[in-house]
Image 1: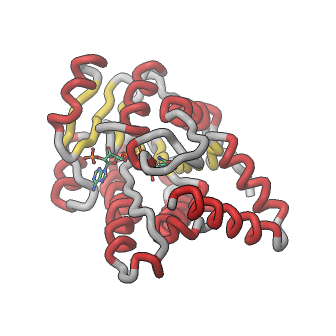
Image 2: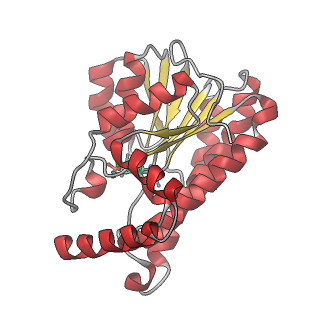
Length: 258
Ligand SMILES: NC(=O)c1ccc[n+]([C@@H]2O[C@H](COP(=O)([O-])OP(=O)(O)OC[C@H]3O[C@@H](n4cnc5c(N)ncnc54)[C@H](OP(=O)(O)O)[C@@H]3O)[C@@H](O)[C@H]2O)c1
């Protein structure tokens, strides 16, 4: 299967980033400005929380109130941001539990609502807008957990695998309208999401930059850090070593994080 999309040019584009308040989303907004985007709608559950970002980056950044679990807000943003050619589905949550450890489906349901249904609500609302603006692109922020489940984050892994699956199927479904669909894969990123976890972490700036580079070079599956590259290589090797590697990493995680 080809890993090649039509390159997407950031310069002069209009973009919507979900979950732009902090972490990777905030880094995307800065990186888009650096690469010459002309307007960035910064989605935030509380728009007040991005006022500082707007003060720093200027009027190209436009705050939009957006909780991706709220269909009415998604519809409202679609009516306000009808000029975008790039949607970045970045908003995400991590409950940090395995299903059995959690003991019920509440954590899984919470993660699904943001990481999968949120991405789906946004993609459904914006697919016709992207079509009418010439095709454009969708970038979904996935994870190495999309590629193989990591048991201590079992429910999160399930949501990221589902998000990868939608990324793959939407690439086909949106092909005829000229919309390119991309996915970013990364290991630990140094954001609030994993403050409680120790280990090597990539900077959110580096992941945002690698993702935008992937868009501009037309790389559909963007392995944005060393961990993503290593995991994909391990999976390509196949064999019993894959499960062994994941289980021993899970054991190590449990010992270290307590
Ligand atoms: N950190 C990692 O190690 C890592 C690794 C691979 C992939 N990722 C993915 O990268 C993406 C960004 O995560 P991050 O690391 O930047 O996490 P983060 O620092 O916790 O930021 C998460 C962002 O998502 C927003 N958000 C949460 N629920 C939302 C909702 N219902 N509607 C709209 N926005 C919502 C948050 O907004 P509020 O400020 O309002 O809470 C925040 O802006 C996620 O998709 C995550 O799964 C992260």
